[in-house]
Every structure is written in structure tokens, then in C-alpha cells.
Length: 347
Image 1 (cartoon, rainbow, N blue to C red):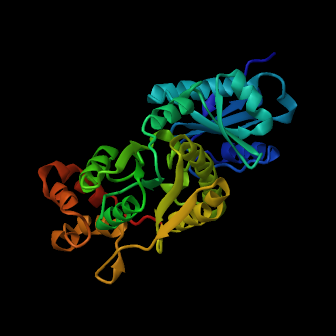
Image 2: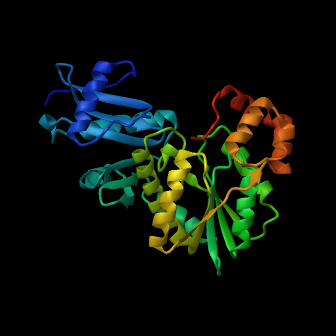
């Protein structure tokens, strides 16, 4: 069997990308708009016969030419992508694949987490990764009415605090999940610190790191990136299926979300939650946004004010714990990052 070469494809290599698109199309796949690494396997005529890609800690967009099926090319592509990920320092990996390909990836050491609409399988390379996460959550399971709240808190505002207070007042235990992936302008370590400080007065709140399983680049990259509505819905659906497994581990029967008048992504996500959660026995409570200065409080607005260093205006939108942090020297690096970001609105 001839030896084929695998090489990365540069974003400017339109010829190769065109071949990749044609190969993916044969498999009924559209190239993801936000890939950060694409590789291709070339034959002796420099034609692409297999491809695969990465985004963050996920593997995706695989295809092999129909003329080369059964030659073990996909195995070589996956091995190459795993090597790339390990060089990046990404050890815990995820992938999406069609159901009829799941067995192949199981043989390569990937394990199923969830299935979406009988068409897609979401997998990871840790045998008990998700089960261990669920087991760790189950240790915090309590009696009585348990509810859940998921927030990115980029950063933590009076709106987030109001939502947490309302949810906590209406249940026995509130499990508050903080999105732990560092894909936001305010780092996770800071977001978590501000959430903990801003909810310290609520004794029935248990805070959890979301890990890679709730609103992460593995389950819901559209939350962090502009994308088509159909793609957002697909990612939201996967995130929702995984959340129902988490809710089951914690005996959660209610989820609170903040009303979303501005962000398209969060608005679509809320629609999916309100229509699908009840099918799993989970009530979805959409809470109207807390307002300030006749407008809904928004983390996007807070980031814009941080760019201007308008602390008097910030005082009306964030708790004292958040304000004190951003006035401190410790916050200088974070504020500089927000200032350099340009557009800081979450669409």
C-alpha cells in the first residue's frame, strides 16, 4: 500500500480547502466555520484523500475519499490530530461523529457521552470522564426541591445576583454552575471569585465548576462565537441533553434562566430550554432581567463601561464585590484585555 503524507492546511490555501469541502460534502458534512487546525492526507498526485480538523479540545470534520475506504486512512488522520492536541497540552479530548462511525472511534479509545436525535454521537477519550463528573456532583445531592442555574458571569453583575437570589428563594437547594472554560474576556478564576463573593449571603447555594460538559467549546462553541442559527440550535441541543443527565444526578427538577432581550445566542438557547426541559420533567423558569437606568442589566454593558473606566456608572450595574475587584490593582490586566478587545458585546 502506498504511503501518503499528512500536512496542515493554511487558511490561505484555497485550493486545498476547496478539496476538503468537496470531500466533506460527500459525507454530508459542512466544514465548521471556526476550526483552528485542518489537516489533509495527500496521494501521490497531491490530491486530498482524507481530512480531519480540530477546534479547541475537540476533533471534528472527518472524511475519507470513497476510493480509499478500508485503507485505515482515518485512523492515521485521528492519530495525527491527537498528536497535535497533545502538543497543545490538550489531554482530555472530545469529538462528534455520526452514529454509524461511533464503533470505529470506540476502537480508538473514545467513549460515548450522549446521542443527539439519533444522528450524532458526542464522545470523549476518558473511559469514565463524564460518569466521574456526575458522581462528584451526586455527592452534593440534597433532599427537597433542587434547582439549577448556569451562568458565565463575564463579569458578575447585579442582574446575575438578582437571578441567583430569586432562584435560591424558591427552592431548598440551588446548584449554581459557573462556566469554567476560559473562552471569555474575564478569566474563569476571576469570574468564579466574583460569583462566590456575590452569592456568599445565600446559604442554600452550592457552586460547581461546569467543566467541559456545560456550555464549553466541546458542547456549545456557538455560545462564544458568532454562528448560524441552525448551528447554534444544534450545539444548544447537545448541551441540553447533557444537562438533563446532570440534573438527574442531582435530582434537579427546575432550571432558572435569565430573560435574554439582546443576545441571539442566549435567546435561542432559552427557547430550546423552555420547550425541551419539560419533556424531561424539568421546569424551566425564565426570569425577567433586573433593570437599571431603564435598561436590562447586561454583562456586555458592564464590559463597555470597563473599557471607558466609567466606575460611577458601573456602581449601578454590579455588586460592591465586583466593583471593588475592578477598582483594585489586581484587575488591571483583565481591564487591559477588555480594552484591547474592541467589540465586547455578546451577540
